[in-house]
Amino acid sequence: MRAVLDREMDCRRVLGRFWSGWRRGLGVRPVPEDAGFGTEARHQRQPRGSRQRSGPLGDQPFPGLLPKNLSREELVDALRAAVVDRKGPLVTLNKPQGLPVTGKPGELTLFSVLPELSQSLGLREQELQVVRASGKESSGLVLLSSCPQTASRLQKYFTHARRAQRPTATYCAVTDGIPAASEGKIQAALKLEHIDGVNLTVPVKAPSRKDILEGVKKTLSHFRVVATGSGCALVQLQPLTVFSSQLQVHMVLQLCPVLGDHMYSARVGTVLGQRFLLPAENNKPQRQVLDEALLRRLHLTPSQAAQLPLHLHLHRLLLPGTRARDTPVELLAPLPPYFSRTLQCLGLRLQ
View 1 (cartoon, helix red, strand yellow):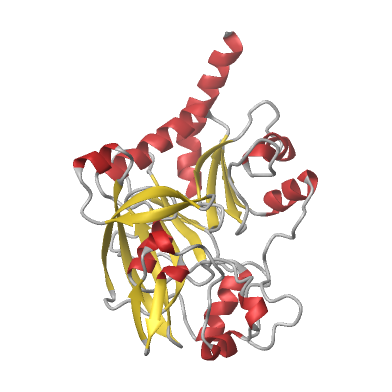
View 2 (cartoon, helix red, strand yellow):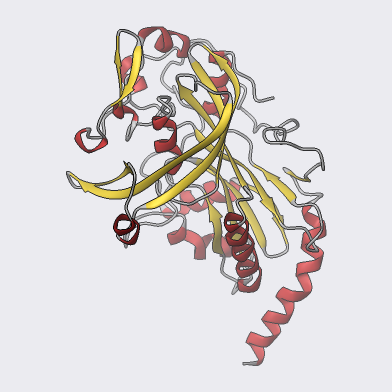
Protein backbone atom coordinates (compact mmCIF):
# COMPACT_ATOMS: atom_id res chain seq x y z
CA MET A 1 0.00 0.00 0.00
CA ARG A 2 2.84 2.39 0.90
CA ALA A 3 4.51 1.70 -2.47
CA VAL A 4 1.30 2.57 -4.32
CA LEU A 5 0.90 5.83 -2.38
CA ASP A 6 4.55 6.74 -3.00
CA ARG A 7 4.08 6.18 -6.73
CA GLU A 8 0.96 8.35 -6.81
CA MET A 9 2.83 11.13 -5.02
CA ASP A 10 5.71 10.82 -7.49
CA CYS A 11 3.28 11.19 -10.41
CA ARG A 12 1.75 14.30 -8.86
CA ARG A 13 5.16 15.88 -8.21
CA VAL A 14 6.33 15.43 -11.79
CA LEU A 15 3.12 16.82 -13.32
CA GLY A 16 4.14 20.44 -12.82
CA ARG A 17 7.71 19.80 -13.95
CA PHE A 18 7.00 17.96 -17.18
CA TRP A 19 4.24 20.33 -18.40
CA SER A 20 6.74 23.20 -18.41
CA GLY A 21 9.38 20.96 -19.95
CA TRP A 22 7.19 20.02 -22.93
CA ARG A 23 7.69 23.45 -24.42
CA ARG A 24 11.41 22.81 -24.77
CA GLY A 25 11.19 19.30 -26.21
CA LEU A 26 11.95 18.16 -29.75
CA GLY A 27 8.92 18.66 -31.97
CA VAL A 28 6.95 20.42 -29.21
CA ARG A 29 6.06 24.06 -28.92
CA PRO A 30 3.32 26.24 -27.44
CA VAL A 31 0.55 27.14 -29.87
CA PRO A 32 0.73 30.79 -30.98
CA GLU A 33 -2.36 32.74 -30.00
CA ASP A 34 -3.07 33.59 -33.63
CA ALA A 35 -2.40 30.08 -34.96
CA GLY A 36 -5.28 29.04 -37.17
CA PHE A 37 -6.10 25.65 -38.66
CA GLY A 38 -3.20 24.47 -40.76
CA THR A 39 -0.48 26.81 -39.48
CA GLU A 40 1.10 24.37 -37.06
CA ALA A 41 3.60 22.66 -39.36
CA ARG A 42 5.54 25.72 -40.41
CA HIS A 43 8.78 24.79 -38.66
CA GLN A 44 8.51 21.01 -38.38
CA ARG A 45 11.65 18.92 -38.47
CA GLN A 46 12.01 16.16 -41.02
CA PRO A 47 13.70 12.88 -40.11
CA ARG A 48 16.96 12.04 -41.80
CA GLY A 49 16.27 10.57 -45.22
CA SER A 50 12.82 12.11 -45.57
CA ARG A 51 13.82 14.39 -48.44
CA GLN A 52 13.96 11.88 -51.23
CA ARG A 53 14.74 12.59 -54.83
CA SER A 54 11.76 12.37 -57.13
CA GLY A 55 13.44 10.11 -59.64
CA PRO A 56 12.77 6.41 -60.32
CA LEU A 57 12.21 4.41 -57.16
CA GLY A 58 14.04 1.18 -57.85
CA ASP A 59 13.52 -1.70 -55.43
CA GLN A 60 12.42 0.44 -52.46
CA PRO A 61 9.46 2.50 -53.61
CA PHE A 62 8.29 3.43 -50.11
CA PRO A 63 11.13 4.42 -47.76
CA GLY A 64 10.38 4.51 -44.06
CA LEU A 65 8.04 1.53 -43.78
CA LEU A 66 8.60 -1.14 -41.16
CA PRO A 67 10.19 -4.29 -42.58
CA LYS A 68 7.91 -7.33 -42.64
CA ASN A 69 8.30 -10.24 -40.19
CA LEU A 70 10.00 -8.22 -37.46
CA SER A 71 10.90 -10.01 -34.26
CA ARG A 72 9.75 -8.61 -30.92
CA GLU A 73 13.26 -7.36 -30.21
CA GLU A 74 13.50 -5.64 -33.60
CA LEU A 75 10.12 -3.97 -33.11
CA VAL A 76 11.15 -2.69 -29.68
CA ASP A 77 14.34 -1.28 -31.20
CA ALA A 78 12.34 0.38 -34.00
CA LEU A 79 9.90 1.94 -31.52
CA ARG A 80 12.69 3.15 -29.30
CA ALA A 81 14.25 4.84 -32.35
CA ALA A 82 10.83 6.38 -33.12
CA VAL A 83 10.67 8.29 -29.82
CA VAL A 84 10.38 11.99 -30.64
CA ASP A 85 9.99 13.34 -27.12
CA ARG A 86 10.14 12.25 -23.51
CA LYS A 87 9.18 14.41 -20.56
CA GLY A 88 8.39 13.13 -17.07
CA PRO A 89 6.03 10.14 -17.37
CA LEU A 90 5.13 10.91 -21.00
CA VAL A 91 6.76 9.26 -23.99
CA THR A 92 5.84 10.28 -27.54
CA LEU A 93 6.43 8.07 -30.57
CA ASN A 94 6.15 8.69 -34.30
CA LYS A 95 4.43 5.39 -35.14
CA PRO A 96 5.28 3.75 -38.46
CA GLN A 97 2.42 3.08 -40.87
CA GLY A 98 0.97 -0.42 -40.69
CA LEU A 99 1.77 -1.14 -37.04
CA PRO A 100 -1.41 -2.01 -35.13
CA VAL A 101 -1.81 -0.54 -31.66
CA THR A 102 -3.85 -3.50 -30.39
CA GLY A 103 -4.77 -6.85 -31.88
CA LYS A 104 -5.57 -10.49 -31.26
CA PRO A 105 -3.70 -12.53 -28.64
CA GLY A 106 -0.29 -13.51 -29.98
CA GLU A 107 -0.27 -10.76 -32.63
CA LEU A 108 2.72 -8.42 -32.67
CA THR A 109 1.35 -4.97 -31.81
CA LEU A 110 2.44 -1.81 -30.05
CA PHE A 111 0.46 -2.85 -26.99
CA SER A 112 2.03 -6.32 -26.90
CA VAL A 113 5.58 -4.93 -26.64
CA LEU A 114 4.91 -2.12 -24.15
CA PRO A 115 6.50 -4.09 -21.28
CA GLU A 116 9.73 -4.57 -23.28
CA LEU A 117 9.65 -0.96 -24.51
CA SER A 118 9.21 0.27 -20.94
CA GLN A 119 12.23 -1.75 -19.85
CA SER A 120 14.24 -0.56 -22.84
CA LEU A 121 13.54 3.05 -21.87
CA GLY A 122 14.64 2.41 -18.29
CA LEU A 123 11.19 2.71 -16.72
CA ARG A 124 11.57 -0.52 -14.73
CA GLU A 125 8.32 -1.10 -12.81
CA GLN A 126 6.52 1.88 -14.37
CA GLU A 127 4.99 0.22 -17.43
CA LEU A 128 3.77 2.46 -20.24
CA GLN A 129 0.13 2.65 -21.29
CA VAL A 130 -1.43 4.13 -24.41
CA VAL A 131 -3.08 7.54 -23.99
CA ARG A 132 -3.66 8.51 -27.63
CA ALA A 133 -2.61 6.82 -30.87
CA SER A 134 -3.08 6.85 -34.62
CA GLY A 135 -4.72 3.77 -36.17
CA LYS A 136 -2.99 0.75 -37.71
CA GLU A 137 -2.96 1.93 -41.31
CA SER A 138 -2.12 5.54 -40.46
CA SER A 139 1.21 6.81 -39.20
CA GLY A 140 2.02 9.47 -36.67
CA LEU A 141 1.78 10.42 -33.04
CA VAL A 142 1.39 7.94 -30.21
CA LEU A 143 1.24 9.34 -26.70
CA LEU A 144 2.25 6.97 -23.87
CA SER A 145 2.35 7.48 -20.12
CA SER A 146 3.97 5.57 -17.27
CA CYS A 147 1.78 7.38 -14.72
CA PRO A 148 -1.91 6.30 -14.48
CA GLN A 149 -2.94 9.67 -13.03
CA THR A 150 -1.36 11.57 -15.91
CA ALA A 151 -2.94 9.23 -18.44
CA SER A 152 -6.35 9.69 -16.82
CA ARG A 153 -6.01 13.47 -16.84
CA LEU A 154 -5.10 13.54 -20.51
CA GLN A 155 -7.88 11.16 -21.51
CA LYS A 156 -10.40 13.36 -19.69
CA TYR A 157 -8.98 16.39 -21.49
CA PHE A 158 -9.46 14.73 -24.90
CA THR A 159 -12.98 13.60 -23.98
CA HIS A 160 -14.02 17.08 -22.83
CA ALA A 161 -12.50 18.64 -25.95
CA ARG A 162 -14.56 16.33 -28.20
CA ARG A 163 -17.75 17.16 -26.32
CA ALA A 164 -17.00 20.86 -26.75
CA GLN A 165 -16.13 20.26 -30.43
CA ARG A 166 -12.60 21.58 -29.95
CA PRO A 167 -10.21 19.68 -32.22
CA THR A 168 -7.05 18.39 -30.58
CA ALA A 169 -5.70 16.20 -33.41
CA THR A 170 -4.66 17.22 -36.91
CA TYR A 171 -3.96 14.66 -39.61
CA CYS A 172 -2.25 15.24 -42.94
CA ALA A 173 -3.53 13.30 -45.95
CA VAL A 174 -2.79 13.16 -49.66
CA THR A 175 -5.94 12.53 -51.66
CA ASP A 176 -6.55 11.19 -55.15
CA GLY A 177 -8.72 14.04 -56.35
CA ILE A 178 -9.28 17.60 -55.17
CA PRO A 179 -12.23 18.44 -52.86
CA ALA A 180 -14.79 20.81 -54.38
CA ALA A 181 -14.48 23.19 -51.40
CA SER A 182 -11.21 24.44 -50.01
CA GLU A 183 -12.35 23.89 -46.43
CA GLY A 184 -15.41 22.90 -44.48
CA LYS A 185 -17.09 20.23 -42.39
CA ILE A 186 -17.88 16.63 -43.28
CA GLN A 187 -20.83 15.15 -41.42
CA ALA A 188 -21.99 11.57 -41.85
CA ALA A 189 -23.72 8.86 -39.87
CA LEU A 190 -21.55 5.74 -39.88
CA LYS A 191 -21.91 2.13 -38.79
CA LEU A 192 -19.73 -0.95 -38.74
CA GLU A 193 -20.97 -3.77 -40.97
CA HIS A 194 -19.54 -7.27 -41.39
CA ILE A 195 -19.22 -7.81 -45.14
CA ASP A 196 -17.61 -10.96 -46.55
CA GLY A 197 -15.67 -11.59 -43.35
CA VAL A 198 -14.42 -8.01 -42.99
CA ASN A 199 -15.63 -5.23 -40.68
CA LEU A 200 -16.21 -2.17 -42.84
CA THR A 201 -17.41 1.34 -42.04
CA VAL A 202 -20.56 2.15 -44.00
CA PRO A 203 -22.44 5.49 -44.28
CA VAL A 204 -26.08 5.57 -43.21
CA LYS A 205 -28.44 8.07 -44.80
CA ALA A 206 -30.98 9.73 -42.50
CA PRO A 207 -30.45 7.41 -39.52
CA SER A 208 -33.46 6.75 -37.32
CA ARG A 209 -33.47 6.75 -33.53
CA LYS A 210 -33.42 2.97 -33.69
CA ASP A 211 -30.30 3.10 -35.89
CA ILE A 212 -28.54 5.28 -33.32
CA LEU A 213 -29.43 2.85 -30.55
CA GLU A 214 -28.11 -0.03 -32.65
CA GLY A 215 -24.66 1.46 -33.11
CA VAL A 216 -24.96 4.07 -35.86
CA LYS A 217 -22.93 7.14 -34.89
CA LYS A 218 -23.08 10.69 -36.20
CA THR A 219 -19.55 11.76 -37.09
CA LEU A 220 -17.92 15.09 -37.86
CA SER A 221 -14.57 16.19 -39.26
CA HIS A 222 -13.10 19.53 -40.30
CA PHE A 223 -11.00 19.65 -43.45
CA ARG A 224 -8.78 22.20 -45.15
CA VAL A 225 -7.03 21.91 -48.51
CA VAL A 226 -3.43 23.05 -48.06
CA ALA A 227 -2.11 22.51 -51.61
CA THR A 228 -3.15 20.96 -54.92
CA GLY A 229 -1.28 19.55 -57.90
CA SER A 230 -1.42 16.76 -60.49
CA GLY A 231 -5.05 16.06 -59.65
CA CYS A 232 -4.22 15.45 -55.99
CA ALA A 233 -4.52 17.46 -52.81
CA LEU A 234 -2.72 17.79 -49.51
CA VAL A 235 -5.50 18.01 -46.94
CA GLN A 236 -5.46 18.62 -43.21
CA LEU A 237 -8.17 16.79 -41.29
CA GLN A 238 -9.40 17.34 -37.76
CA PRO A 239 -11.79 14.67 -36.45
CA LEU A 240 -14.26 15.86 -33.84
CA THR A 241 -15.66 12.38 -33.24
CA VAL A 242 -14.06 8.96 -33.02
CA PHE A 243 -15.11 6.12 -35.29
CA SER A 244 -13.27 3.35 -37.10
CA SER A 245 -11.86 4.57 -40.47
CA GLN A 246 -13.76 7.86 -40.04
CA LEU A 247 -11.32 10.04 -41.98
CA GLN A 248 -10.91 7.57 -44.86
CA VAL A 249 -14.67 7.26 -45.31
CA HIS A 250 -15.20 11.01 -44.96
CA MET A 251 -12.77 11.66 -47.82
CA VAL A 252 -14.45 9.00 -49.95
CA LEU A 253 -17.72 10.88 -49.41
CA GLN A 254 -15.92 13.91 -50.87
CA LEU A 255 -15.04 11.72 -53.91
CA CYS A 256 -11.37 12.12 -52.99
CA PRO A 257 -10.08 8.90 -51.41
CA VAL A 258 -6.83 9.02 -49.47
CA LEU A 259 -3.83 7.89 -51.47
CA GLY A 260 -3.07 4.29 -50.55
CA ASP A 261 -6.60 3.57 -49.32
CA HIS A 262 -7.05 -0.03 -50.44
CA MET A 263 -10.11 -0.48 -48.21
CA TYR A 264 -12.63 2.18 -49.28
CA SER A 265 -11.38 3.84 -52.49
CA ALA A 266 -13.34 1.40 -54.69
CA ARG A 267 -16.54 3.15 -53.56
CA VAL A 268 -15.67 6.04 -55.89
CA GLY A 269 -16.51 5.33 -59.54
CA THR A 270 -15.68 7.34 -62.65
CA VAL A 271 -17.60 7.70 -65.92
CA LEU A 272 -16.39 10.10 -68.63
CA GLY A 273 -14.16 11.82 -66.11
CA GLN A 274 -16.97 12.39 -63.62
CA ARG A 275 -16.74 10.84 -60.19
CA PHE A 276 -19.66 9.40 -58.26
CA LEU A 277 -20.31 7.27 -55.19
CA LEU A 278 -21.04 3.58 -55.53
CA PRO A 279 -23.15 1.71 -52.95
CA ALA A 280 -20.88 0.93 -50.03
CA GLU A 281 -22.56 -2.40 -49.28
CA ASN A 282 -21.84 -3.74 -52.77
CA ASN A 283 -18.17 -2.78 -53.00
CA LYS A 284 -15.59 -5.10 -51.51
CA PRO A 285 -12.16 -3.77 -50.51
CA GLN A 286 -9.70 -3.84 -53.39
CA ARG A 287 -6.41 -2.30 -54.37
CA GLN A 288 -6.65 1.37 -55.23
CA VAL A 289 -6.47 2.03 -58.98
CA LEU A 290 -4.60 5.17 -60.05
CA ASP A 291 -4.61 6.62 -63.56
CA GLU A 292 -1.52 6.38 -65.74
CA ALA A 293 -0.65 10.08 -65.50
CA LEU A 294 -0.56 9.92 -61.70
CA LEU A 295 1.49 6.72 -61.76
CA ARG A 296 4.05 8.43 -63.98
CA ARG A 297 4.19 11.44 -61.69
CA LEU A 298 4.76 9.17 -58.69
CA HIS A 299 7.27 7.03 -60.63
CA LEU A 300 5.29 3.90 -59.76
CA THR A 301 4.44 0.79 -61.71
CA PRO A 302 0.91 -0.63 -61.27
CA SER A 303 2.32 -3.45 -59.13
CA GLN A 304 4.11 -0.94 -56.89
CA ALA A 305 0.97 1.20 -56.64
CA ALA A 306 -0.87 -1.86 -55.33
CA GLN A 307 1.45 -1.70 -52.30
CA LEU A 308 1.12 2.06 -51.80
CA PRO A 309 0.87 2.82 -48.05
CA LEU A 310 -1.99 4.90 -46.71
CA HIS A 311 -1.01 8.59 -46.80
CA LEU A 312 -2.73 9.54 -43.55
CA HIS A 313 -0.50 10.87 -40.78
CA LEU A 314 -1.37 12.09 -37.28
CA HIS A 315 0.86 15.13 -37.44
CA ARG A 316 -0.23 17.36 -34.59
CA LEU A 317 -1.69 16.89 -31.13
CA LEU A 318 -2.68 19.53 -28.59
CA LEU A 319 -2.08 18.90 -24.89
CA PRO A 320 -3.37 20.98 -21.97
CA GLY A 321 -1.14 23.61 -20.43
CA THR A 322 -0.04 23.61 -16.80
CA ARG A 323 -3.12 25.56 -15.74
CA ALA A 324 -6.63 25.65 -17.17
CA ARG A 325 -6.16 29.03 -18.89
CA ASP A 326 -2.70 28.30 -20.28
CA THR A 327 -2.09 28.06 -24.01
CA PRO A 328 -2.25 24.41 -25.16
CA VAL A 329 1.05 22.71 -25.89
CA GLU A 330 1.54 21.58 -29.50
CA LEU A 331 3.17 18.23 -30.21
CA LEU A 332 4.38 17.49 -33.76
CA ALA A 333 5.46 14.32 -35.59
CA PRO A 334 7.47 14.67 -38.83
CA LEU A 335 6.04 13.12 -41.98
CA PRO A 336 7.27 9.65 -42.96
CA PRO A 337 9.90 9.58 -45.73
CA TYR A 338 7.54 8.00 -48.29
CA PHE A 339 4.92 10.69 -47.53
CA SER A 340 7.45 13.50 -48.00
CA ARG A 341 8.61 11.94 -51.25
CA THR A 342 5.05 11.77 -52.57
CA LEU A 343 4.63 15.48 -51.82
CA GLN A 344 7.78 16.24 -53.81
CA CYS A 345 6.65 14.11 -56.75
CA LEU A 346 3.32 15.93 -56.84
CA GLY A 347 4.75 19.38 -56.26
CA LEU A 348 2.85 19.80 -52.97
CA ARG A 349 4.11 21.67 -49.93
CA LEU A 350 3.03 21.58 -46.32
CA GLN A 351 2.98 25.32 -45.65
